Structures are given as structure tokens and as C-alpha cells.
Image (cartoon, rainbow, N blue to C red; front, side):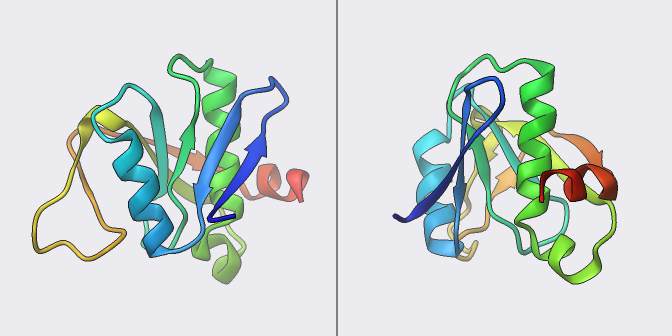
Length: 121
């Protein structure tokens, strides 16, 4: 399986990349769409996408926690993790950007507290 899938308590599914190549494929699949996409503010995390187009605030927060859990920022620091949240329609790719790297036009940043990540482990 090239993607990691996590079912949230609500039943919604979040799909996560496992490396730069799968992140590239995942984001390209949802680029230009209304789906919510997540990534840490720092490099080295999976991109995560909630599969449904109109997630609740609770699902968005849960998705941010899942992405934080699988990030290098969490693995290396075990502290709060900043997660950028944006829609697929706000994603762009320039020719000189490496695989797995994208630009975004509008984002919201959620700080996932350490205790929230510990609670799902």
C-alpha cells in the first residue's frame, strides 16, 4: 500500500503519504479540489487529506493530530507540532520544486498540543 489510511472516530477517512513520491501523488490527486489537506509547518511530514469534501471542525482537528503524529517534527522533538491546513484548490507546483514539495496560497495553522498526540498513541 503506497498510502497510510486512518479512519477517524466519525468514520471519515484521512489518507497520508509515506514519502516524497507518495506525497506527490496524493497531493496531485486532490490539487484543485475542495478537500482539506494538512502538512506540518516544518518539512518532513506526510501530506494528509480528508477524503470527504465538507469535514466538520472536529474532523479537521483530528486530521491535524494524525498528521502531527506521523511527522518528523514529532518524532524528533516530542513537542507541540504546527500543522498547516489548506484546500486542494489552493495548491500549486512550480517546475523547479522538488518531488513532494508544493506551494499553497491560503492556509490556517493549527498547533497540535503534545498531549493530544500522546493520547492517540
